Length: 349
Ligand SMILES: Nc1nc2c(c(=O)[nH]1)N[C@H]1C(S)=C(S)[C@@H](COP(=O)(O)O)O[C@H]1N2
Ligand SMILES: [Mo]
Image (cartoon, rainbow, N blue to C red; front, side):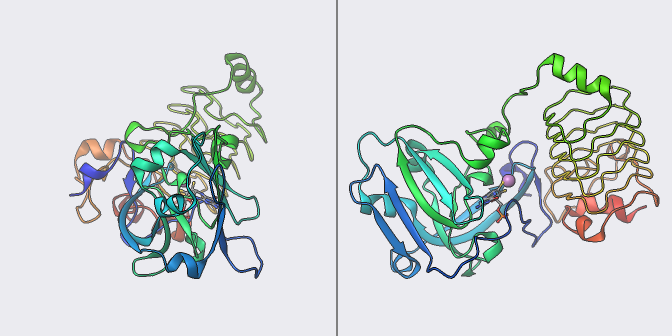
């Protein structure tokens, strides 16, 4: 059993699976790959991949914890320690933060305090499982930061800048991801930014389309026939709500709470429901085609259990399972990314 190593509210991804999250590829172009360390350093430096590979090689086994609630334990990475690069440049006195920038279309970024870099000892990784890091997982070179949600591990590392003041990363700035990112403290998202007035107005309108209503509290509300196409409802609370016939197509519902909700005949087609909780929700006639389901929970059966152990077939576990039947529509490929315990619920129907 590995469950002592699973942070709160995380679940293990199916054995051998590694979900792809965020950007899928680096920026196109043939310019040779380089990594530059700049900002408050004594000597700015740019390294080619060959130069990085010639530095002392370190292996590190890291547990990956995505904020959308999946974890993948004991992943063996190899590369050079970030501290090796910092030592070669010399940190200037006033430097307090490091900003990491990706060679990607949106120049994705994240940041960490220097004090934490010293204790976390991140890896500038170019190998995983003994082979070059796959391109979609950040190859040729990515950052791997142990003990933080995986959004602090930047794929396609191109630039590291040392700063006096923090520069929030892409998710931290645009999506309210918690800048602390400590999995053991459940530091996932910032507190709701919606005022009670804004919430009341949205709930009365019954049309959430294209609105940013993340962390909305709609617990227990009667929202039958709600229209919420493309709405941002990350971390929203729909527990016990009546959402029959609701249209959530292409909405962002990551980590939303649907325990006990009535979703009969609702459309979640093309929605992002990563990490969402559907325990005891009624999903008959619901449409999940094209939806991203990684880390979603449909029953409590395998929480904290290792991939190998079967879920307990106790009545309590079944009581908390979502109601799924032949009218519930899913893609087989999306189900495959769920943990074995979650998949079993779909096999049973
Ligand atoms: N350049 C870049 N790095 C990124 C992201 C991204 O979108 N772009 N997403 C982050 C998030 S939220 C996660 S969970 C991990 C996912 O890495 P993976 O696709 O290898 O699983 O990368 C992190 N680093
Ligand atoms: Mo993530």
